[in-house]
Length: 113
Image (cartoon, rainbow, N blue to C red; front, side, top):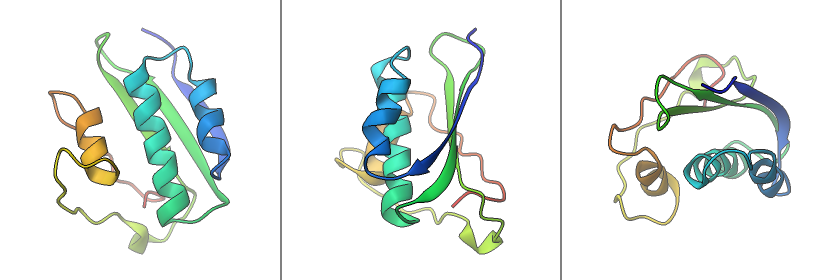
């Protein structure tokens, strides 16, 4: 099991490929999901938002938790669950493909949008 990685950065379009590079020790799916989540922050929360990206290896070699949080304490910033086709090329559809057979386990807490 690998130690957790925690990266604090500013969500900008330029940060997306930089994050992918910093996570080069992880497999393609982990890098894809982490950069998709960061892209969602840029598009839906705002360019320049400070975020924390955390990658945690769980109990098995194919289980990884990816968290992207912002410091906003506003409870109205909670996400809204929307449906999307599993074949979508962006957004929830892409994340659905990232989650694997076990499905995602979203962790919603203060500061998450």
